[in-house]
Image (cartoon, rainbow, N blue to C red; front, side):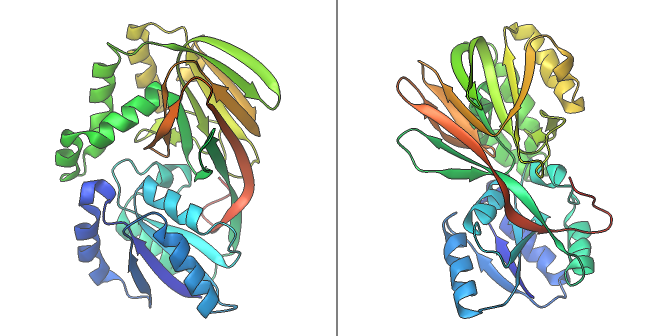
Length: 317
């Protein structure tokens, strides 16, 4: 088995690379290192490794945040002999929470070193989505339509987030932006189809389609979501007052928001969402486009699409 580290220098608003350079001095296992400039780089790297090393197994370890893991899992889709690992280096690190990885670099590395030659891989799901007229993309955490996508976009553009990331406090920007944007956001009407059953929704704040429980830097938006069950979990928030929205985003850290009458949950394998006005979309925390008149978002689960090493202290998610 060959160990490959993939480092995203843009993670944590460009603080990931300097942090990695310090941490790399403690790594003792033989490895190769790739610094990526673009998400598509991973597909090229994976293809080249498999082509030049036929029959070899690769343990590809992402160093960065949720976007880094999205690009790695998307880029290795279809390669049966590539297993995925993770060393957290982003702002929110919801991937670490949802897939039960240690949140600290040293603990994550110790786990990798402990299990790299002994643990058997486990196959996990991902989601595949497209906005009508555009290409297909994978997501491994969740996609969001509406207010949560607006917050994700504003947070990624925020200068404050860049400053807070210097002290590993970047996720604090989400509640700050939430309070500000809640005052001006207008809920929307959406038509949603889940496994062929249509639902018309009024005064919608957001719809989140989840493959694992967490988003937004630790919010437990879909408490029952599992990345190994062959379905996606939907969380729909509608008919909520602006002030009650604040309460919802406090309760969501504990997974208690689902007890509110304005929060609805569904599960499905295939989801379609459309709206008449321009509604933003995020995928794993990154802005992914807009749903507007005549354009439909389609999401579906891709069961067992990628592999991660299992281990004795991590039962299936």
